[in-house]
Image (cartoon, rainbow, N blue to C red):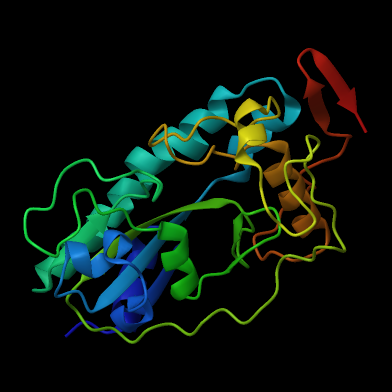
Length: 269
């Protein structure tokens, strides 16, 4: 029998930054088309695996001089290689010890069914799981006002995948801290895409020239905003106010952030 402590110790050895565990009971109200049990009916635990976006991966986009650094190391390779290998290695660890492990990438839950049900009463393929909701249920952090998943370790600076397993693990408690300080902090969006109530107009995000980009995993997913000015400004605020644990010798932002308000209109404030 593998304990939670043994699992997390192995995860740390292979450089996984964040691990959270939720039991299957926390998903009892999730519709079948998004429920882990639709993929693995014998699942007893959902393990959330997180790898940080290194702060240096954001440097070129923060300076406005090299966006590819982020696209490769903070997005594409991080999702499809670095994080995927971490998820796979932890899955191997579980299966080496006799417990089935189903690795799940962070595909957007907005993807509609792409087939027809193969059994009566069963959802159509493909069942898509909300990975950030899993991270919430696993106690790893909170959703902030700007719509980012925030952890006390890295703020918005991470990506997640999950593993479904029939191993019954002790679940982690819900996160009971507070990272986001809105309305003390601003919403950070120069296009006005974030309402005072925290609702996000993703149509504006799709046209944003301030570091936002199409979803890297599927065209129907929400835009990737983790390199955008809203996320970078959130990170800068959290660091300057000592709200994240991963700290640095020098501040992330030392001069006004560049902003594209309209096509070819760049301002600094």
